[in-house]
Image (cartoon, rainbow, N blue to C red; front, top):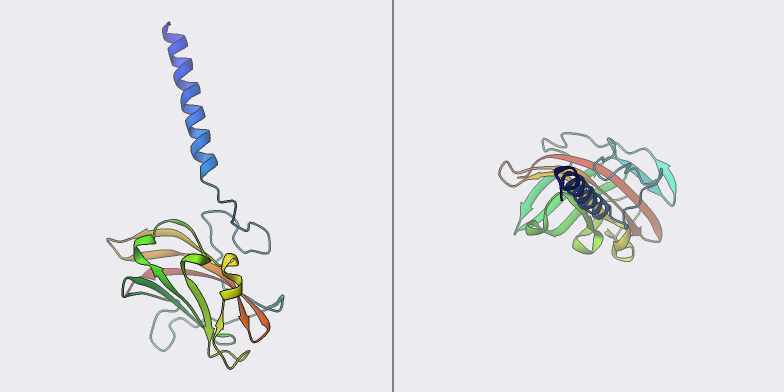
Length: 175
């Protein structure tokens, strides 16, 4: 085999490996649509969106909220907690994600719980139990060294028979 053939074989091999790696990077469960507010695997929305029974409503996310970052990011008992206070919808909480599972990529709702409390839409805590496959956490960046986290979450919740949909970005230091 001469140098040209060896070089050509090397280039073809690298292309095949590169195509295989790129092909594995896309999650078939990611809901990429104009309605999902997540445009690519590495880009989260810049604002929080909220829907009640399919109708988009405006929500305000005051930051800081009573002196605390909003959304709030913290670790408690080796679990990630993301807290989002909205003036109109209530208090969203993403909980129970094992910190050992935290890395860039998409995590399905089976790995965490999403809830809404203090909501004008229900006297009870609204949960994503019926919609766990529709809940996602997209981690764009995570550093265990600097304790910083950036990404977004989206999901659906049952709120006393009303369908609540939320999509929210987050970025900050884990407390």
